Length: 219
Image (spheres, rainbow, N blue to C red):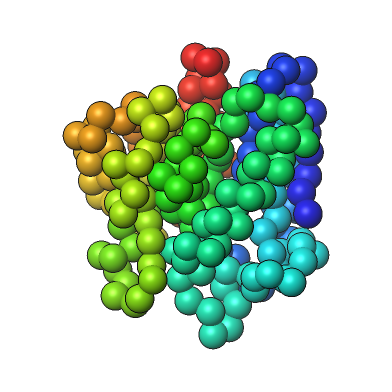
């Protein structure tokens, strides 16, 4: 399932990917107005995606990210591949040459990893309140995040990293450390702090919206 807010700029597409919510949450209800705001500000068609288990999206392949008994789904290779296929499908459907991926929380973590899995798929990655090294928090097998594929990320991909000053879930240093690592590896990255920003709806904050709009006006 997804929500579309049309823009007139041809060849470009914004794709919003949410993070972990309780099983069955109506994420499209939360994100449709955000998609409309971004398409209005940028004149780019903006799609808000509901991942499996949310807003009536099918759970044939995967459960919701927060499904009981499921852990670290956003750090599993098969889920990253699924996300990549979803982005490709939307890219083809909307005849886009340039994709801006806007991810929050687990959505940011997956999007970051995807830039290493599929180096030319995403041209701009807006990552808000994400985590970039799953191994610092979890020791389970078969987990992956962008630090594992950093050398494969295209130098053409532009990153906008946004963190909340008072985020207690994705602490500011998580984003700052990844920004420093990205720069050290020659990636094109910018970092923005949301003053007093907390984790919930950090991607929809005024500072985030302004930063994303400015970021895309540079295109």
